[in-house]
Every structure is written in structure tokens, then in C-alpha cells.
Image 1 (cartoon, each protein chain N blue to C red):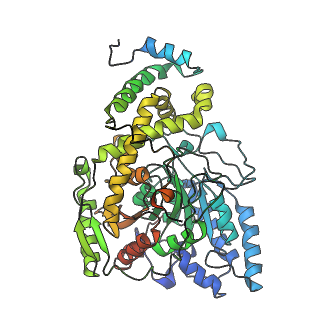
Image 2 (cartoon, each protein chain N blue to C red):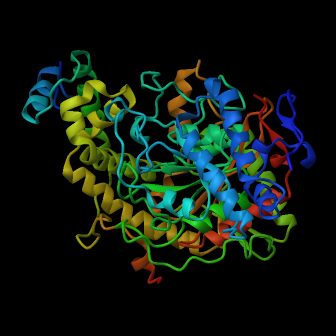
Length: 484
Length: 69
């Protein structure tokens, strides 16, 4: 089966199921068609390669497209499925990864001049698990250099900056820039990003996606280019919450190759996905304390509406407050990030800083002068923040809290780009390690996506997904797609 | 110019040389000095813990903390 094509959808296009182009199918929709023999993985992969060909010169979501490798995998998947060896919901599903995930035999640049010719001999555990589940890698996605920086965009990297599909004049959010752009624009059905202070959730927020940073230790970081050992997370950006659950099912779980991996049982994430919010206690962090006044009115209003929607479904809403000022979490993140990232990239900075873009070089400069006592002060404060925040999270089934405070900034207003990255409550949960998902909460008056975070107890990704699904299913936000 | 609270250009050049930094574009040294001041201020602003028993979270894993297995 091939869904009817729309050649020129109207801005912010809305599709009926029958009209939806293949590149705008969700993972769950495509999976049902593939599993039912109505859609060929070869057809699906070709549709995505055609989409990349059609729009990516403008969008710039990819650094490397592995078309022939994807075609070979699609042919193999088709043969396996025809032979009755369907592997499950990811079999034949095309995806892409931020270019800081190593894949054996494929160039991994980290978006940097320093790694332009780097070809790894290892494959990241997350990619290996997805491929074992039958998913098909389309390529490597755009990223801030080394997946990090100072929050600014300087247009000085070897690959042009990815653009936001909702408005090409706007930023995608960083650092998983291509991951956000690709899933929203339909150049990948889902993507993997990495998140040290919000780098999965901020592109998800800016591009209208569901982006999940699970509990620290839940998803392996093995064989990814590290940025900051104690704050780094890996995870999926998807169009729907159900898609996120499907991807999480494949990538979550203990990995001996990741020293921070947690040996905690992985539940069936789709088992209670549609159980609704009735009876769940949702802590609503309406008052963010000092710094919270920066939250856009549209994002605040959308969160109030989300509370009303969840309450109407039977959730019990309690207003709560973070146990410490946002500034404490942000400073801890910043100082730990400076120190650990510098430690990882010290040789590059000392010997080849001239090859770095300004954003990475400035971060390395910061780490270069950081005192050990200050780094350790941050890690000691972190311990108290973890304990106090965990007490709050455990007093509820889930939290609802702002993520990115602002909508995607415009490139021609560069002074708004660093505040987009800095004015958030995403870093809170890198510091603590709790699972946090950025969900799309609608669009502002200009059609630019809004967002909020749903946060759960340690290793209770199941409840985060359940609450997110309850909200998503009661709203029309998944009916609209950007027009390119 | 520098005082006890800021990092001067000569000072940062010496620091960079002493710590093996090579090839930093000349125009970047002033920025390095600015950032050194920013980093110093951020570091000193972190509240110090009242007890030696509050250890760093450098071996940060949540599973052992919660006894989950």
C-alpha cells in the first residue's frame, strides 16, 4: 500500500490518515502496515530517501546519508518479513542518529573539523539494539560541534546549521539539531539524540516533538562521543508518545559497555500506555521561583491548559515547587559540564583549538581555567539537589513543569539563541537523573511549537509515557505537520 | 588591565603557556581572559557544604541509591 501523496500541502499541513504521505506516518502506523503486509520496507525507505533528496538541501538535517546501506537493509527486511520472520514493531522502520553515535564503518564527525575523517570500528549500543530489532539506519544527523558548546550559534562549523521545519528562519534547538529537524520534517521516522542539559528535549520543544531523556543509566551511552560523563543521556525524539515507547523498548536496559548503565528491569512500555491519567497524582510546578518569570506567556498558558486536560481525565493535580532555585541546578550543570567536557577534549583544545568553532572553543576555554575545588563544590551541591528533588518527585506520580521557556528563536535575532538554551528547566533533571520527556503542548499564534516536561520517579519511564499519552490523545497537536 | 577579581591579558597568556595551550588564535586571548573571570565567579558562587559528610556525586548512579535491581 502506498498512501496518497500531497504534492503541495498548505502551511502547517493537516492530513487525514488516507492522505498522509509515507514520510509522515508514525512508527506505530508504519509498523502496523508493514506487519500486515500492506507496506514494503523497501517502499518506505525509498520514500524517506526521496524526502531527504527533496528537502534536505534546505533543511540540512543530515551530515551523512547512508542510502545504499539503508537500501540493502530494507531489501533484507522485506525478505525476512515475507519469509515470516517479522521481528516486531521496528522491523523495516527508517531512523537516523545524531552524528555523535558511532556506527562501525560510517564516518562520525561530531559536527567538527577535528573529526571530519573519523570512521569508528565500533557501533553504539543503542544503534546496535535498534538494528537488531530490524530498524533501518538512514544516516547521521546534524549536531552542535561535539554535541555541546556555549549555547550560541556562530555559523562557523563545517556543516551548515539545520533549520526548523516549522519556520526555516528559526533555530531547531540544540544540540541535537538534525534530530529535531528530521523527525518534524519527515526525513527520519524517529531519531536518537543526546542530552547533557536538554539537548534531546530542547530540539523536541523547538520542533514540536516528543523527546525523552530517560533515567540516568536507563539507555546506554556506550560508543557515543562523550560530552560530560555524569550528565550525558541518550534517547529518542519521535512524533508521538507511542513511537517513543516503541523505541524505548528496544534501546532501554543494562549494558556492560556503559559504566553508568543501571541493571534495572525494563517493563513493557506499551502495556499501560493507554491507561489514562485517572487517579494519578500530578505535581504541577506552576511557580518556578526566581528565573521562572522568563517563561513565555504562551508556554505558561499551554501548561495551565494541560493541567485542565489531565484533571478532566481524573488526575489529581497538586501545585508544588522545586526545592531549590533554578540557578542552583543551572550552575551545577554548567560547572560540571565545563570540567568534564574539558577533561574529555583537553588534547584537542591544547593542540588544535583553532579548528574548533567558537561555541565549543569558548566552552573549552571555560574548562581550561576551572578550579578543581569549584568542580567538586558543584558535585557536592549536586548530591543535595538530587536528594531534595527526589523527595519532591516521589511525593507525586509525575511532575508537570516547563521545559524550554521560549519558542524557537530566529537566526536573525542571534541574541535570543543563547537564552533559548539557557532559560529552561531541563537541566534540573540532568542534575538529578530523573526521567523527563518534552511534549508538544500546541503552537503559538505564529504556528511555532510550544512545550512542557513530564517528569517521573527514577526508572519509572512507564508513568511518564502514560501521562504523556493521556495528554497527547486528548489534544489535536499531532494532526498538524510543518510544510516544506 | 586587571585587578584581583579579573584576569588580565598578560596573566592569561602566561597561564596558557604554563598549561601547554598551543595555537589559540591571537584574537581569542582577550575572550579567554573574560571567560576566566566568569568561571572564577561561577565557581566561587557555589555554596559550600556545611558538613564533610556531604560527599561529591562523582560516582553518580541512581540504581544503587534507590536499591533498585
